[in-house]
Image (cartoon, rainbow, N blue to C red; front, side, top):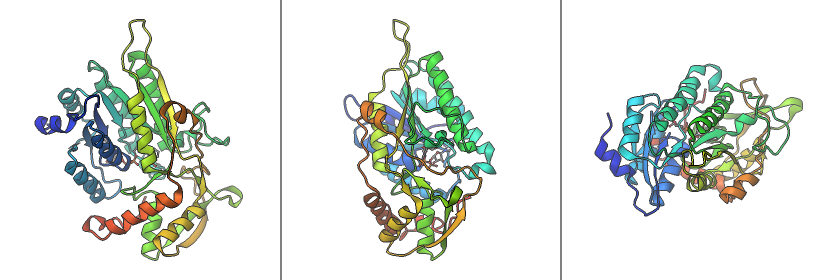
Amino acid sequence: KIDVAKVQRSCASRTDGAGAVLVTGSAGFVGFHTALALKDRGWGVLGLDNVNDYYPTSLKRARMKELEKAGVHTVEADLNDRGVVRDALDACKFTHILHLAAQAGVRYAVKNPGSYVHSNVAGMVNIMEEIIRTSPMPKVVFASSSSVYGLNTEVPFKESDVTDSPASLYAATKKADELLAHTYNHIHGVAITALRFFTVYGPYGRPDMAYFSFANNIVRGKPITIFKGENDAELARDFTYIDDVVQGVIASLETSEASGKKPDGSKPPFRVYNLGNKHPVTVSDFVTTLEKHMGKKAKREYVPMPKTGDVPFTHADVSRAARDLGYSPRTNLDDGLKKFVDWYKEFCKGAACAGIQSYVPA
Ligand code: NAD
């Protein structure tokens, strides 16, 4: 059961013209930052998250505490808990849904496929089924991933590229989300936008991701493992700073058309955008910049990339997002990693960091 009064206080907008948005995955990295930024712009924001223990929940709790301070309440529930999702939709009459909740991570999927089917496939269908029973239907923006480009070798990756070669089960479920979204748009006229994020990093980031576990190992004097691709090729990623991603997410919420069929029978389009940085960096160069800000050298161990779903490189073409959303990533790696490390050093003085520094991703 939800606390209706608390929920309605959280989702009431403060500014004329600002919407009311449900942010799923609000205790997660991207959800946390976006929920805060939307609240700051006068939006009514309600969070929903099951606070799962894929990585230490102390970090999710710390994010939720900051959200509560800012007036954003998090309903602790699973996407598949249909009664709770329905109660939240009925209580708030959301204008927008920002669906970010998912089982993330590429390697974890090898041993835990059910978790991806539960959250990314069943969870997506569940929330969409609840959305289509509301009237007027909200606009939906959801997180897809650069991983849908899979084994594509043509760079930069464009939204119009064929994406039929996922390299991981995670990627396959994100592609499935795009296909599901397309059908809800086609049949029910839901205005829906898929955002393909590219390796997002920054303060309050994810301890399962390489940059965070590298920082943990550098601090503790432990070696870091860097994968090498075929013929010893360096892996490269289009690392994107969180504030740039948040800017793109908010622009996509603010520019999407209304849901529902128009009097002439037409429907809003199904849209897909890359939100990347368009400047891929090798993991080795990334580590060098991280070392500079950590003030300590890493013990690097290079190993061949295991067959667990990683791809050799990612590189976004962001011209579509630039044209339609005014998206323009501004934060270079040096500035972005400095901000991450400044946060990390401060956060890891406190109790909330206990368990995070020693956490080893699956
Ligand atoms: P995250 O793991 O920090 O956040 C996801 C949140 O969703 C978590 O707090 C988790 O508890 C919640 N969640 C998972 N399953 C749920 C369920 N069944 N019901 C309710 N809550 C559930 O990840 P993030 O980095 O913030 O990613 C946000 C979204 O962006 C995800 O959909 C992810 O797949 C996607 N994405 C992220 C990146 C990145 O680099 N961070 C890149 C590409 C795509």
